Image 1 (cartoon, helix red, strand yellow):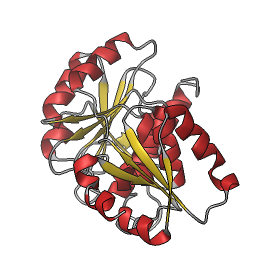
Image 2 (cartoon, rainbow, N blue to C red):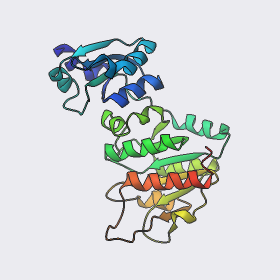
Image 3 (cartoon, rainbow, N blue to C red):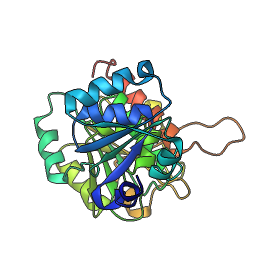
Image 4 (cartoon, helix red, strand yellow):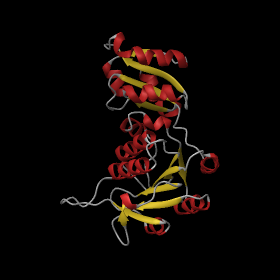
Length: 258
């Protein structure tokens, strides 16, 4: 196992946790080279995993707890890990083309420099749950879809169309030219409660970073600014929770029919 561990970065990424590994097999969007399963797991505990691996023709190997700990660099692996290719990002042009062909008003999530993989994973899980058309993240000063983010999303990230963009403010203008109305989440300036924003049409929802919110140019590029009312002593919600609330408000307004 030693050589296999040392070559993970050159061969791809190590995903860990039962659900993330199962979902990467279900999605079939990136190559899965092999799966490691803890040698003490009962066959019944890995039956579904083995069935998915067999369908995808991916070998499953038994491994010791020590080997798995080393393979995942101490990640909470639940006895399962997979060596995969990198996350399959899509290009912004492909996203714009898909939005033009969408049968229903698009819902796009834009993340302005979210740096915490736990928040990114939470947002990707919510985006997958509401069937968002795409998630856009900056290439710089933002976390990508790392194994930790996939783990935090319980594997839902594997089903999301995610694009990394070089200039989020410029991409926002392209989305507006494509017919989307952009609503940013913030608490400063002229805002309206998020439940009073019309999310029934083509929508881009812009969520800021954990510590600083929306950057100035990003905020100025939004058509509307919405806030989530806070009645208690807490000043704000984290990005994952705030984004989920607004995505589900959009789903509610659309009759939960997406």
